[in-house]
Amino acid sequence: MARYSLRVNGERREVDVEGDTPLLWVLRDELGLTGVKYGCGVGLCGACTSHVDGEAARPCVRTAADSVKTRITTIEGLSRDGDHPVQRAWRELDVAQCGYCQPGQVMAAAALLARDPDPDDAAIEEALRDNVCRCGSYPRIRAAVRRASRIMREER
Image (tube, rainbow, N blue to C red; front, top):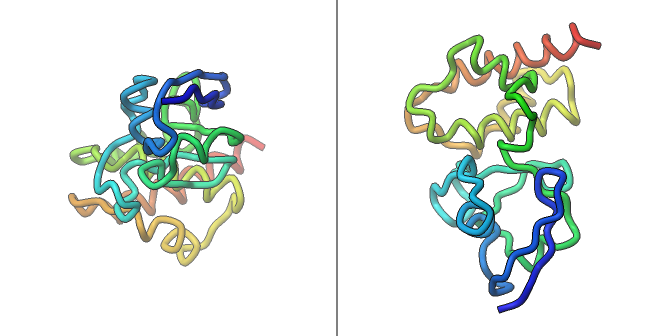
């Protein structure tokens, strides 16, 4: 067991865990950030998608030790009041069905829009292709990404 200092949602957080502990469990169990969902544990489903240094990443396949010198953002840290353009678009278009995959979908969409504020459908498909939605709400998810892009343009 070792002490790790992680930068999570803009705050320095100290955790005492084994170095090979998946970042997912550090976020959920040690820091109480349960918006990060456990889906598969092997980086295939996207339910845990968060940002590491601004890019979409899978905390289930990153370790605590590998995450020390990074900036980690979870769905809880995307915006203080749930008013990020992606979150607003999600609510406006009533995207969520069961909702389990939605934090990961939102985080993947936010990472896409941070690097490409006006993505075409192919870019949206590519960015979200590995985020699984068992309810099949993909058409609403794509529409919400396009809506979030418009919201961002309108607010410039």
